[in-house]
Image (cartoon, rainbow, N blue to C red; front, top):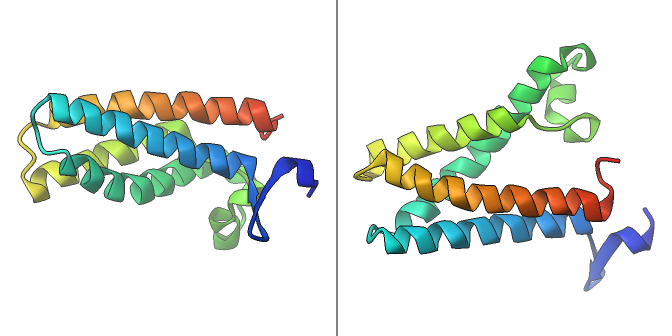
Amino acid sequence: MDNQLMLIYNGIEISWFAFFVTVACAAGTAVACVLRYFQKKPVSDIFVLVTFAVPLGMLLARINYCLFSYESIDSLADFLSVTSGGFGLYGAFLGVFAAALIVCFLFGCENLGDLLDCAATGGALAVIIGRFATCFTAAEV
């Protein structure tokens, strides 16, 4: 790949897209934590939510993508290979919602709606930064 599209740190090549996605997730988590603080609720709920939301969101987003692109998925290897396809946004939303349910029921979060308010606002910022990343890096062009 062209070095202009890579960030090189101590000999490790990091794509600019991966850098922006990481910044997007960090910014979304920070905004959700600030909102949770102003709700006067435990900020730790956001960190537990993110811990469950990332893997569940990625899994369900990939399943969502594969359901609508089933003609290009011939095997389990095709399903697991994200280089031949992508993720579905609705599946990611469903994964975050499932993670919020898990946090509320297993960890004693008082109000699902309050937790989802924080997650939605932080998630919206993450999507905005992520879309900027695709524009900046021409990843989806």
